Image (cartoon, rainbow, N blue to C red; front, side, top):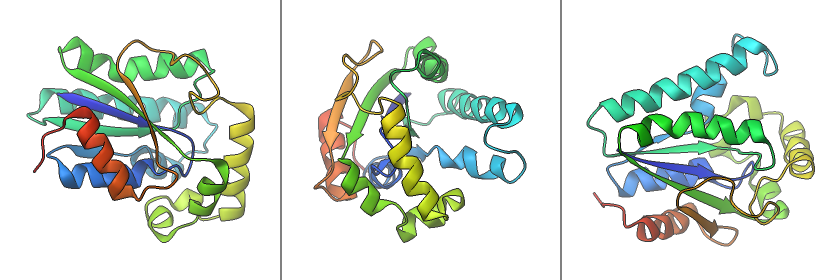
Length: 191
């Protein structure tokens, strides 16, 4: 199986680009809020139960994708590249693919803060991410987390893991345009 880890800061377009990659290819999308939203119905974000289950659910989905006949999976994540624990977290998530002899590519999406702030609160984003419906909070969190952590390799060199790493500036691209770039860059099979 081929795992694409599509990462970048909040509102950079990971889910939208991932949906377009899934539309163009036989790959499936597993966006980070697919685990976040149901868990927030029961647990607070900073609770140990939320953090434990989020990791376990994500890892199990990836394990089952490896065990299935799925050709590829696009997984999205916000990754604080400056934190050793985030590096260990990502290594833990990709391990089932690597252990099975699969392929893992890391694709970073980048857009400047102003572009990302303009994308926060779009109908598509709010429909899939109820926790972002307080757009004032979401915009403040986007700015604050960008100040506290390196969410892009432009702020944290070099890329912290071994393995192929690609950077796509999608600040001026549509989701479809960015997906086309990723599909071509990785030579993905098309539908």
